[in-house]
Image 1: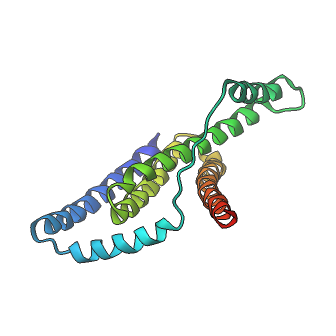
Image 2: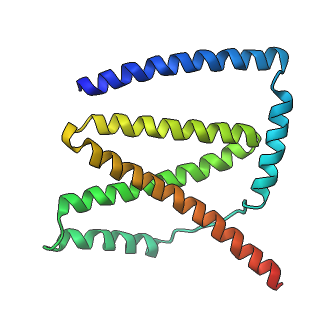
Length: 182
């Protein structure tokens, strides 16, 4: 716990300084609009870039699909050749990656309404928050396992984010192919 407290103290000090700087910049923007031109320019460029990648994807989950997942997830627990603790840890990381995918996709859709610049800033903030949460979770465990746990958790998160990107690009590619064939 001492490592967690030390990390959180340094983190909170850094956040306080960063928030003070951001606060000054936000006040300057609100009072004088000094960043209006840059934000409008970035918003326009990011919107043009995103138009080439954004498409809506609808996915349904049926009772059969849910049952299949539960059965397939439970089968290794009944097998003798599977390390149950390692399996449950890997399963948890897989669920974490899926949750990260879902949260990032919903967050992206929500923030799109605020403009591309603010979307980009929010995505950066979410990435920083994710790293902080990983560090806190890792430091709560054993010091000897810290590196392996950090690697596993970050790999799972990156896997979830990569899946979100692949899904968006795949949906875009399929729609482009349909449009070309029509």
